[in-house]
Every structure is written in structure tokens, then in C-alpha cells.
Length: 426
Image 1: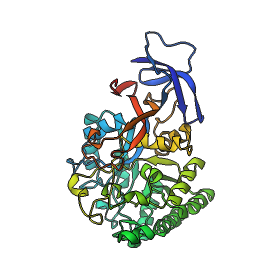
Image 2: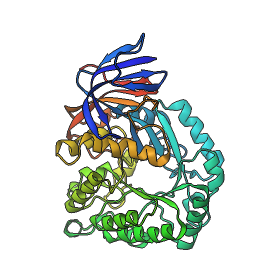
Image 3: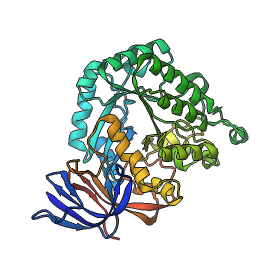
Image 4: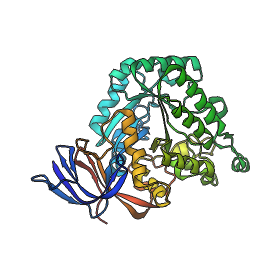
């Protein structure tokens, strides 16, 4: 299919520009940006001044296959991603069983390729069954297509085992994704410590647990020379350590979830379990500090940390409720909150939500340049709506934004130049 997008507002995260322009697509790749004339026999798409940007690359998505398909399948996750402007997402290894063998990974790759309409890549477990006792088959999993290795929120307590994993990963050039938390301090926590936690009588965890976990991991990275990505940095106290690690030349990047950028600890309110996430929502000062870190490029990646939970898992007392929130379909409109508040420009947002995750994982997407895949999202950053969680395409509906007034609608999503989602006219 040959396409010619005209009258578009191009959001280019590589050049950092937000400007009017045109774009042509031939055989699934971008053939030219602002070409002198459209390609022959092209289908002309009038963007009517709306934003055309690289499709989002969402790093850290949980899909319930295998083990919890009733919460999310590749088909429903793919549909939610397409409706949210996400053209590529990377799954976590926290399935049941965990993705710790090439056979399990091969099963996931085949399921994803046949069920989903967007591109899906997979992380594999760092240790067997994510138990932190024995290294997984990193070499075989890398050959089978794993893009990174992580035990998710099951932090490896034994520094010697983690150091061995890092050393072996370093020899293969594999990327390790850590979850910076001191597991003893964070065990059983439901919120961040402070006056709010005390007034609500909820068990809390100090922000220092994140800082301590990150410092431990950085010492091991310095010792082994491993490539490392922190999945979520959410506290101001961790930022100087992250800056120091980068300044010292360690191969380190960091991410943050959209929920930690747009919500704070008070949103929990009267024990609203849809706001229970891991790590817990932080103080407003932490939220503002982390937004500034994204603007400066200190934090590299913004993701949804999509974690579907069914009603039975959430309709429980706050301490007992399962943590997590869906986010594939709400990532873009939630990010528009940061844009409309003046915190981040659209190129800055797309740098963190598309370009940087693609670069870190060695993927060709996430950019508006000739010969890049034509994975694109057309959206209106100003279109208002009230979110109804029952309209979400995910199987699970556990979004903290239910009933919230939001701005930013995806109008169309393209994968390799093929439309995989188009919003119906109102």
C-alpha cells in the first residue's frame, strides 16, 4: 500500500520538532518526509491539521498468556494497543509459568504473531521461575528472540546470583531490566509512607527503598559492566544516583510509568484499589521531580506498565487487592495531561514513549525518518472525552482514569503502513 499523508502536524522525536508537513509511505516503510510530490498511485490521507507521530513503543506490558488469559489475551491486548496508538509493545516475563525457557518464549511469539494486530516483542525471565536462585537460560532465550531479561517486581535478593547473571549477560550483550526496590523494606507495602498512609492506617514503604535497591544494582553494574535498565524510577531521592551513574559512564537507562507521572498518593482517596500500583503512587514533590527528569532526558522511557486485574482481584480491602492498572489504551491521553499542563512538549513525550525505548531495545521503529517502518499514530491532542472503563478493549477494566475528563483521541493507527485502528466518526 502506498500512502501520502498531507496537511499533518508532524511530531518528530529525533529532531525535536513539531511542525506542519507531509509524509509518504511505500511498501510499509516511510519513503520520504516532506516530499516534493506524492508517490504515484498513492492513497491521499488528509490529516486536517492533526498530529502524525511514530507509533508508541510501550515497554513493560503484562499479557495473561500463559496462566491468566481471563485477564488479558494477546488478541485483546493488541486491540487495546491499536486503539491507544501503541504500534509496538514489549511483554513482561511475569506469566505463569514464567518465560524462562526457549519453548515458552516460542509459544508466546507464535501466539502474539497470529493473535495481535500490532508488533510484540518479549522479555524473558532473568532467573528460573523468577525465583532468584538460579540463572535462566539467557543465551538460548536470546537466540530465541528475547529482547531483555527481567524478573519484574520479584527482586533478586542474593547479590552474588544477580552479579553472576549480569556477568553472563554482559558477555552476550544482553540487556537486564531491574526493579529498583529493597525487597525487605517494600514487602507488604500498599502505599508510600507519610502522613496520608498513617491517617488511612495502611502499610507503607519509604521512598528510600527505591534508592537502596537502585544503589545496590548500580554497584553490581559497575562491577560487571552489564547493560541495565531500571523499569521504574519514581522518587526524587533516586534521581541524583541515576545522574551519577550516567555521568560515570555506566550503560544505564531508566523508565517511569505514566501513572506515576500523572497521579499522586492522595488519589488513593478512600481506599480506591484501582489506584494501587507497584511501586505505590508517590508524593506530589516526587511526581514533579520525575517529570522534570523526563524533560531533561535523565529518565529515558515512559511506559504504561499495563497490568490487567479482574474484578475479583480488585474488589477487596486495599491491603489485599492486587496491584496494577491497565494502560495500553490510556497511555496517550494520560500523557496529554503533561503536554497541556506545560510540563513536556509533544516531541519530548514521543522521545520517551517511542524513540528511546526503540533505540534501547535495538528496534527500528519509533522515528519519523526515511526507511523507518511506517508504524504511525494520527491523533488529536485537544479532543476532550470522559473515559468509560467499560469501553476499553482490554479484558480487564482496572483503570484509575474511569470517569475522568481527558484530552487526546487516537484517530488512526498504522502498522507497516496498514491501518489497524480507525476511530469511527462521531
